[in-house]
Length: 147
Image 1 (cartoon, rainbow, N blue to C red):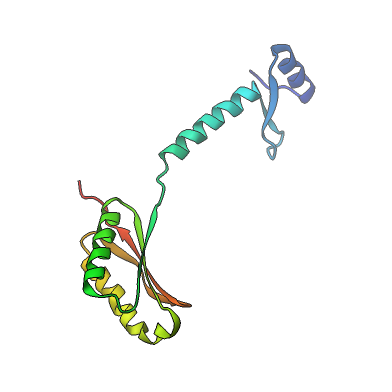
Image 2 (image 1 turned 180 degrees about the vertical axis):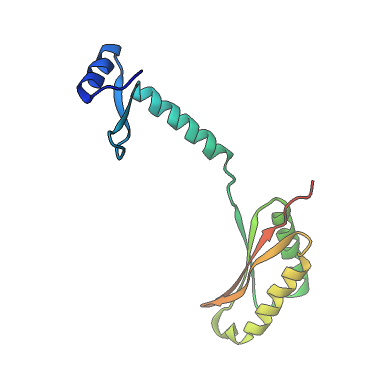
């Protein structure tokens, strides 16, 4: 289009029925562009929507254990955890200590480490077991699919 001063640029934009949009206000002199601003915003929203649709959403599934979970219940929950990791979801496994069961925190940690070891083919430990108040939490992330 060319180089104009502010008054000329505004007149040219008005003559074309478009808007004068400031692109780089910090430049000396400021850089402006003559365009249809509403169309520009519409295109920008469309681009943002496409980018957002392509972004992966992280799903976190939770599995809760007690400090003295027996083998059958453990196996049942382990199968669910395996399924979650195969689907590509992150897994938050935690042991909840009710009342005075906090004295069994070693058993809770052993339980979570056993789960991590049993699921090492499907996911990797993202955060080792950590006691936070009355719950001990561990995070597992799914392993990348080998194609």
